[in-house]
Length: 278
Image (cartoon, rainbow, N blue to C red):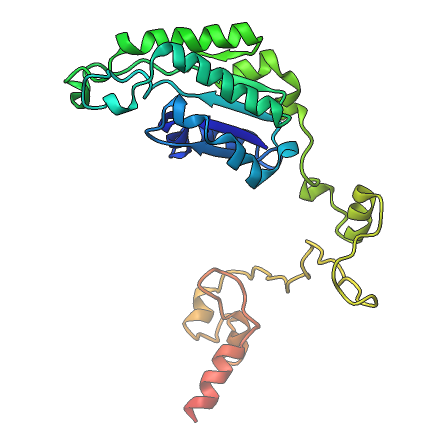
């Protein structure tokens, strides 16, 4: 499992096209991406989260964690979002505490992510409660904490996979085994041999002991009756002319042509219509 811990920047990474979705795509069947982003949270509140998260998933299952707080900590204390504001010194201490808790749970691979710059033209922040200028000290503090602890740091304008590749190459998707083999690698005739070999013992499928697997269905289909293209019908025959070697009425039934130009069991359609007409 890979744990993503942070504020709304992490939470909304699960939306269409978000960075969590990109990770989920890259790690499909190799590692589960656990999004624990909490919109509106600051690093102070983040220190309360780790114990409960690990109660849910267990410490040994988290192989990599990202930590991203700071966007809310950087809110101007005297303005509308001031209740979220955390002094930069406390922010640094909170990051260290969160990282320490993760390590105490057995997480050895941790990536620190800085808060991104703010769109200063956003009308939501016209009062100045959020600004790129206010965020910068917090981004710098995140970098400083990561460097001091010897952890990799992610610039949110770059791809997270680039950091994983440089710092924890063994966690690259291409370096991890698939969870169960590709379907093309499963023995269709004897799938139990594939899975028994994978596990190293005979798998209990939960079926009666004498239950046998049905025979595999092959991709080859039974040979369909072939259609034979017939010759074009001479105009004299089509018009019912018997002279000049033309065919009589009964003989013409052999040349009944389908709309596709293939012979349909010679004459049966016409003979059937005659019988119905009697």
